[in-house]
Length: 464
Image 1 (cartoon, rainbow, N blue to C red):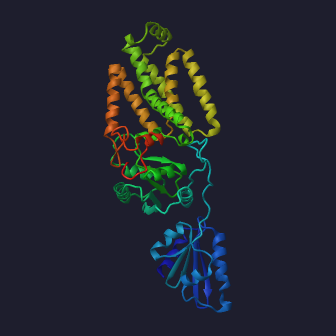
Image 2 (cartoon, rainbow, N blue to C red; image 1 turned 180 degrees about the vertical axis):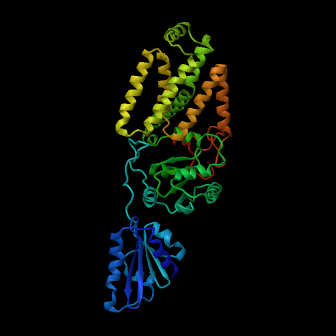
Image 3 (tube, helix red, strand yellow; image 1 turned 90 degrees about the horizontal axis):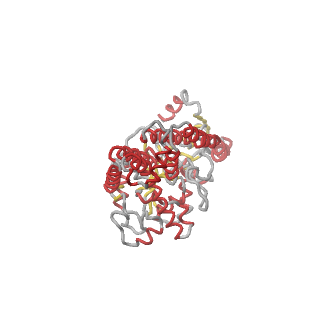
């Protein structure tokens, strides 16, 4: 067979490629695997030991390799393949058996993935503490463990001409919106790229309709979040070698929901959600409002408070906008440094930034104490939103509204707010309004929707 010659030629530049010939009289079986991704123990126990028992001493030949394996080898993880698929299966950890014109692929993958651990980017107090890892089958198993329903459908695709990455589109067939499903599948099939190394590659390539900075596709590393999303009629996308799963579609209200809300009393859940909404307004508008009140609209402040602000800023040589930018840029640097710093050094960085730099800047007269309070309140309010793409949206609009307030005062803030709301209302997430439940308002089962997350969406088909 041509594939045999091609495999032997490949050994020159693939030192981990193993080819073993097992003779049976005048015939022979080729046993082939790639040592770095295949388990030698499994190959020996399931394949080579069996072939050894069927040695020439019994003078036996195979009538059909597939039939013989099916009857005698204690495993169901094998498949008959074509010559063109041999390398793909080898790279995926399979051991290949070639006998005459038959090619059988045996699954003997090595354990190259980390074990199931607690989520690192989404800390959990009361809920399940398992998270996805980089193993494709493990991730599917964590979802199946939670949803034991025959309507849980999976559609597998392969993307990336170089990486040949396996992608799984998962959905509840009796709940999902079929138009949404077909639209999602068609967008994924249209992806033409050399590499798919993570689900984030897919996210960037299928999100063409959303030209704004608002994230309309969310990702998570928590299986319980994915299980909840599936039972709400959403579509989830898994990828090999990725511990994050995409959720389609995602709406604005989804970013105010936390899985911990499922384990709290209803009253406290409502209270926390309104606190998160307030925190969003604070983190976007607080610096701009302070800048406007101290620069343009001073008449809106009580006289005593205005005098207090003026006394604090009397030794600061910079205008308020420069003072604010110094602190905000310092915060951005600390934010990015903290994200890239090992956990063991994060505490030292926080102490240095919060205590040393903040206190030294005030003592040196570079910034005023009230400005430090405003920036600190802004930073603390943004912690409610840990999702990175949503943080990017917050940061960009914060600076945009700061500039408008510097030019037009409170009128500029009003223009910024109108622009923000108009932009949100114009966005669609896979054909659905991004502000769903806010605009348009959904009356059907609205109370239940709000209870389950300031809504994501109803579990009945057609409500998303």
